[in-house]
Length: 219
Image (cartoon, rainbow, N blue to C red; front, side, top):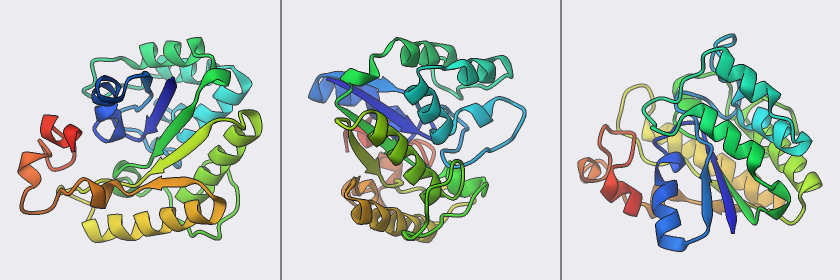
């Protein structure tokens, strides 16, 4: 099984890919890019604009990853991950997307912290790099039209105890994303609740208040 994972930071879904591969088997592919946002451009001109979810999806359905290669040239960095952006782009180019079984899509707290786009509502329509809901719909539509057999699973944002983003905002955002998924028949994984991380036990599972440590990945 080929299972690509997309996230707006290497510490969310991106941090558990290796663990999931050892636990569940299959070939898991980590396409999370540290410092990016999924829904819209964080900063234009430094390469990040080529790594939103919708830019990735356009490249997947066209089988042309020139934009991501341009993003590397423009100086995008992969945060603290040891698996470089260049390797991730090469991995995406080499992958036979027609044989992919399922894709995990996850917004991260970067999408809220950087305030580059609104969350939107479950009634939003398709728009590339729009609100979080609009951009998610764009990705779902493009992937489903080109690869109708791929199962899409959307993951909610995990608990966070760090600056700029409150858990009230995360809970509210997750509810909207879940409503959108239910409306369109897309599977939704409630990581915020299912992880069981909270204000009192957070230091056991998050090494900096945001990114899961070994215990957090296992959760």
